[in-house]
Image: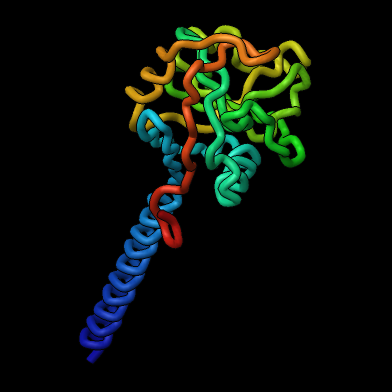
Length: 211
């Protein structure tokens, strides 16, 4: 009887352990799937092709939230890449084809001290000389050497840098195509494509309730 009781207790313990391990395994799987599903991507549909970019919500939460608010409001629809400098970057998201600037929301805090670099294919926020002045406009870096002059180096007006919040994962050939278009002056603005490069739309990609 003593042996049977111990054997029964042992079997119960093993059974409980197996249930616990299985439960933890399923929880870990669910968390993994959740993290995978949480990866945010957007598709920038342009007149020269589509660009897909992943957004770094963990590294630039305020910036990504700000950009997605513009995306969800369809703010970027029918804006243009209004500043194109081959060998440097392409910038857009704030002007219409007639070079009228769209009304924007309040500026977002500069998160350029997040450890991300302005290397080829990364998306960063455009701003004025004031560090916390970015609103809707963004640019896509064309070369790695941009990090030497655009990255965060210190928390001073000169050293704050430009916040990277994403990276192109598909369509870099489209970015390079845009970089090669002829440019000129449009009023006081330089480096404006002579034929508008239109951002037809920007939409979230994947996930529940998304395109």
